[in-house]
Length: 288
Image (cartoon, helix red, strand yellow):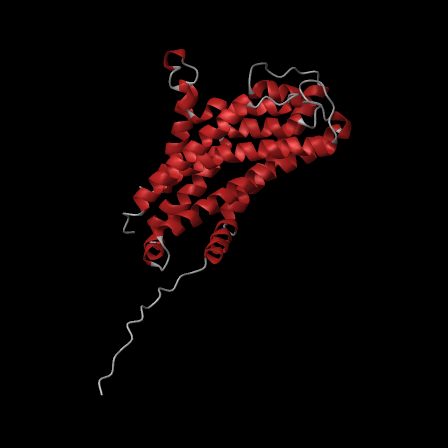
């Protein structure tokens, strides 16, 4: 008799994605640097709130100006403005910085110590690997934005009380309505940070030096901010991510104008798609 062997294909063992995601979150949030950064971010709204209160008690007039400067001026005595002013100020530099640090550690950091090669050889597709890293960075940036918003809201209520929740249009809001607006602001800022993270991941996939990712993102933010001040290149402004960052103040108006906020959200979504596409294109050909 002739024995025949079944040509049954051997299924490749695959790690469930939720386990990969949990492992990535543990790796991110158990690092001392992550905890220190989150602690410092939580201190920022407290320092701003106390500083504005002292300035108001001394009859000091904060420097005027547009955008975030006017938000800081309005934050004195207004518990609703403080969270948005804090998010608006840190969106210009601090939040992109910590986002770039997280994205740099996600790929470039692992590549520098040799662990990325092991991940690329593991029974995990490179698309799932990128998604795991992207979701880890996205979760960290969401936690950072929410932490600042919650601490700023609590600081504003402690300093100014629940009767100081009024919009820039002069309408007083309930605590629930105010929390809804703060949540909207945190979500919008998080989307902008996800756009920064996507570009940072694309850079991170091309290098083994995490600091290069941080420097590149900071340079991009600074150069974009300078270009926004030059009318000679106004044709370029709609393509620059920080173009709508000052629109966060619109959340404090009645009714909320959706033009700039919507435009900024669409622009950020485009950056997310482009950044993740570039990161995947590089990661799919990377050998470690």
